[in-house]
Length: 337
Image (cartoon, rainbow, N blue to C red; front, side, top):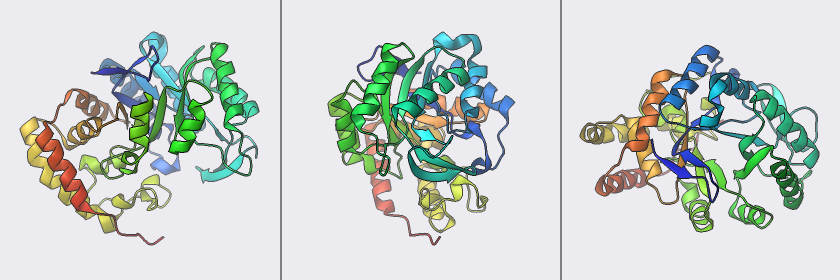
């Protein structure tokens, strides 16, 4: 396993991190979560050298955080616990965001809701400090808390020892700069994959220039880029992977083109002695500005596979070939709602 600092902090995080969204369970994941298996998977991740565990209260309404606490147990000093604030469901404070697993969620970065959230996460994670505390989504109108107020609340928590470092997620370049103007931020978490490369235009260059670590999520496109989801696989209407807005390439109308692309990469896997998932993760880590990639898993063999990608080095000509293939793929077809 390879490790890199989180920004300019004293924390060194594994370049492959454990993304704990799916272990929270719920209808969006097909209600197939096995808590005992999830705990064993997290423990296997630690055994494989992964020390960055990324979760959020909204992942199963605290369930993901509680599973991490059970899995970590007395190994707390081995891990970097990263969780988030800003998605609120207790009441209607904040601005309506979406409905998830049957509950309305609001974006709230108000100091009063942050103060409640951090205490809840400390309890659910069974810890006295959170290593990386991240805002999950930016505040928006009509209840748009000023960034100065949000950062003041986070700095207060840091000074109290409840959190060690501050991170942000899903921000525009302008919002990243605004947060940095209010205090130290060490990381930015955002969506980035071989099929979703918008961050290359501005976000990745900005993070590189400003010394922010990058935590990319959905880098395997919810399993599509592993090559294990064939054309015959059908997702339920309530499952997240049936969402054409978020995952247009996963929809049947577009999936075949991606599977053809991956078939063309299988000789590369044979050359480098790796799986498609490992090849794609290694390509992701090789992109300019990418420092850490979050990979979700609910099975032991999945996390062993993704953890091994940290040590895979793809020669530059093969990386160039993969990038060229991706550019030739074009855009996905619009999928009717």
